[in-house]
Image (cartoon, rainbow, N blue to C red; front, side, top):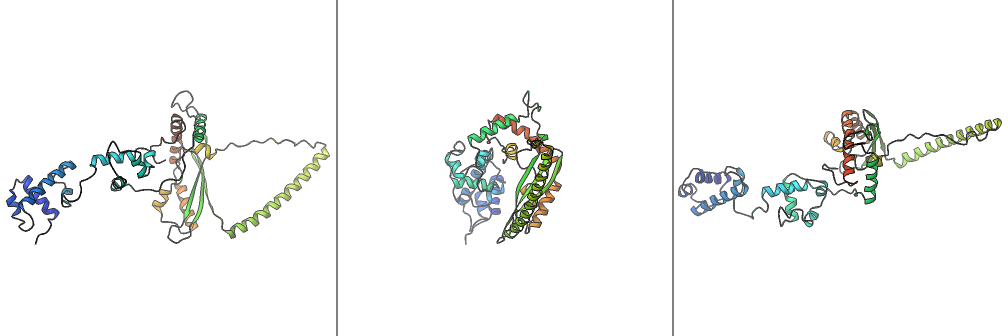
Length: 345
């Protein structure tokens, strides 16, 4: 009864004939019911051809894993696959394209003249890349790009020459770190959302706060407390105003406080300073999910996020702040556009 040769038997036949210079008759005699002289000759030819196409030695086990000659030939060589992967991962524009968009735009025409969406996806899957849901964040409009470009010029870290670092000092800015924190990952659970908020600057990191979404009952109780507080505050303010006005009338100087001299502290606006240049310095969601199992309660979520914030090294924050000037320089050199990122931003 005839049977297929195993990978070990195919490797033995190839080694005996190619390396050992054995005769075909001598090898086929070892497999009287499974291999003919013509079949062995075709097997040797296919192994040599496949080794040449793959640019590998005949000792490579991949040549013998499956029966050679069955199924269609590889549509792309390994070199072509490497070039496709290198192109797709080269910049943000290529990374964020859907497969059909890349094929439509002819991104791979110079590498593989004719390729399909499934072929491209299989190349990326085999290389270990997973498909992700397309991002929903819209790109900057021309007006937003112009505004960001003007902001970058106003906060240029260079004053006299490129790279002198004598312009705007980003170490004097207070930065905010706001991130949504989701609680409850188990299937069927009602997920609770919170808001992580922390503030930091160079060589200093402030405390963090996690705000929760209020339930209807809690919202009603908080409103009652707030109404009572506002009523008491209005009463106290009105009484103070009456006493102050009475005193001014006695002094015959009713307009002494007609104008108020106020000093406003200039805090950093998150939209101005961090739009397009902030890459999440503080809490990293991937870091949370790497070290912790999914949270099941609000208390667990709070403890995890606060712990990560507490152990976040100040050196990491300082390194991120020191990297902002270079990003601002790139924004200026690209006219406010946001397609210059070489990372995942």
